[in-house]
Amino acid sequence: MAEQEIKIDREIDVKNEFCPYPYIRSKLALEEMEIGETLRILVNTATSIRDVPRSFEEAGQKVLRKQQLNETDWEIVVQKQV
Image (tube, rainbow, N blue to C red; front, side, top):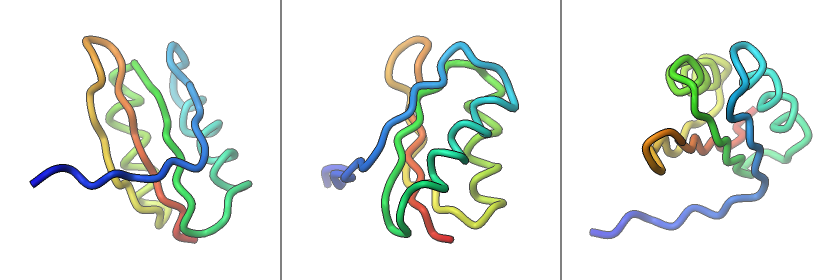
């Protein structure tokens, strides 16, 4: 079964930034969005890969995908819930 296509409403690139900045910048971007919209976050630091999705889940948002794109980059897709 093929992975379902996710509509991306906004994208933010926080590669080469260190915590807590990737989460803070992503959170600010999500706050400007409507409930149900999705934010694609591009990261490349180990702490961001681990902490950004966890922080969004703890804040009541839905992490739709956390996927490695290449040797260094990952995408995190979050859907605004609250």
